[in-house]
Every structure is written in C-alpha cells, then in structure tokens.
Image (cartoon, rainbow, N blue to C red; front, top):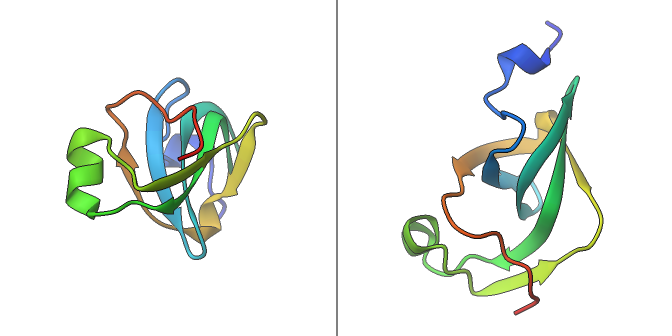
Length: 92
C-alpha cells in the first residue's frame, strides 16, 4: 500500500517529538512528501529524561539543535507526540 500525505497525521505547521528506530527529533512540519516528513527548527534529542515529564513540560535532558531541515522517513517512526512547547533552539 502506498502512503500518501493524507494518510499521515502530520499537518504543516504542527510541532512534534518523533521517535524513530534509532533516534528522536523535535521540529515543526514544513512539508510532507510521500513517505517523508521535512522538519524545520529541528533538534536531535539524545535524552528525553523522564519521558512523561518531557511530553508534559517540554523539559528535555540532552538536545542538539540543528540549523538545517531534517527529513524523517515515516517507515522508521516508532511513535510521535504533538509538541505543545517551544521547540529547543539550544544545545544542552
């Protein structure tokens, strides 16, 4: 079955914390193209700390902000969470 952007819950302009098989990332959806999500204002999340606290408060333990768009293949997504907080812009 081919995935189309209408099958995915990632609306342009919405912010997410996405966990994949190998990493986690935060960012704002810039574009959905086929099986790929393009995130702007993105950051690689090395450690969320207590996960429920991260989702509820936006507090992350270890983050590396990036200055380029990040492209995530939807085949690699394990789960995703709406990010209701300011996106991380600093490396901590």
